[in-house]
Amino acid sequence: MGVSGSGKTTVGKAVAEMCGCRFIDGDDLHPVANIEKMRSGTPLTDEDRRGWLSRIHQEMTELNAAGISVVVACSALRQRYREVLRNGVDILFLYLKGDPRQVGALLGARQGHFMPAGLLQSQFEALEEPAETETDCITVPITDLPGELEQIRTLLIQHGF
Image (cartoon, rainbow, N blue to C red; front, side, top):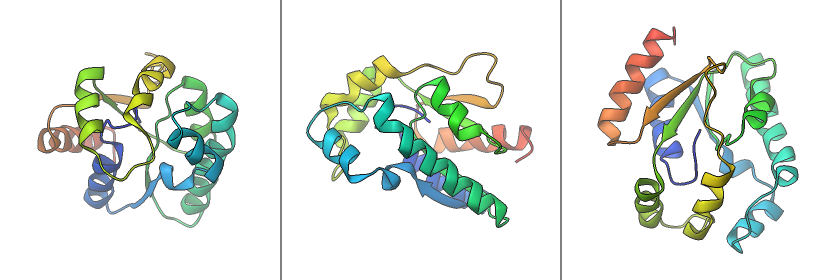
């Protein structure tokens, strides 16, 4: 989880490979209307995200029911969004935390994505960092990919994954 450009897809794919899990990029599950809205520079609303989060939850639930573990890249910016995702699912969130300058640099280097860099501020404004009560959330500072992956590997082992 984290704001757009924080490395969710890159880290998620690496973690899925490391753990032998299926990978789903939540961006691939956005309805066309959401993609067009973001592409035009308009931030999504809670209502825009509702169906998208439900679809991600449905995908996770169906795969888990089939005995398939999954890693999902999803912004999950607000606590209530994380509640939708964790409903009845054994889940662990990895929050890729960075400041606007760090993430802006990563987002600026990204090519071919529908999310324009101009929406980054709205992502930070919507972000509710995991509360201490969200014990299924681990914060991983954005540093460099090899360092992040080694830290994530250690954290996953500590949490029984």
